[in-house]
Image 1 (tube, helix red, strand yellow):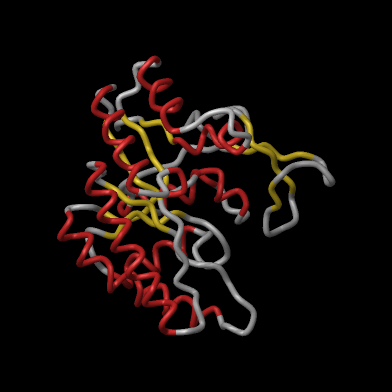
Image 2: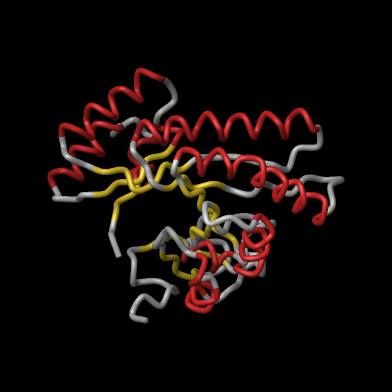
Amino acid sequence: MKLSVSMWSLWPKISKQEADLKDFLRFCWEQKVQYVELLDIFIPDQETLQEAKTLLNKYSLTVSSFSIGNDFVQEKEEDRKKEVETIKEKLKVATQLGAAHMRVFSGNMQEGITFETAKQWIIDGFKEVVPYAQEQGITLVLENHGLLAGKSTQVKEIINAVGSPYFRANPDTGNFLLADEDPLQAVTSLKDLISFVHFKDLKEVPEGQGEYTALSGKKYEGTILGEGQVPMEN
């Protein structure tokens, strides 16, 4: 297994404008990190993309995954088509960065749209973009996130329905806790479909505390890997 560091780990500082792309890449180089995960929200334009490419080369860093935000649950067909085109454009960016994977989401539930309808839109959307990903030699990896793909069974169902070796799983260990699913059991159930993993830990805290709320109402806050509810020793 190859380990990488995600730029999302620096979000608290980035959100306060205390750090940026060059700070993250320099830090990884100083810590002798070889692989990094970059996100589209931190590379908003061509100028930043060129800066990223220059710094990656300078520090001899490899992009393990380029993570994007997308949502196929759009009531209008034209909006779903826009999502398809957006993913295709992001794949071009991932190619320029030399990424082997691109993290994707399913979508968010919306009022007035049934679960089955939303799920079919997600499947149809990925069926349309996967051939383009294959042309680029990039594997799309679906993260467990939200109500439509928060559980391992949901992730597996979507991946199997799309049916491509270029569309696989990106389990996030902490996110399974928010879906009230045991992270170890969830990852184990997806083991034959996994191409990329986000190791994240959360610890349960009393009601009224914590940044994250599980489906059951349990409250969690982020913590150092191995110090929360994710059984890393296994």
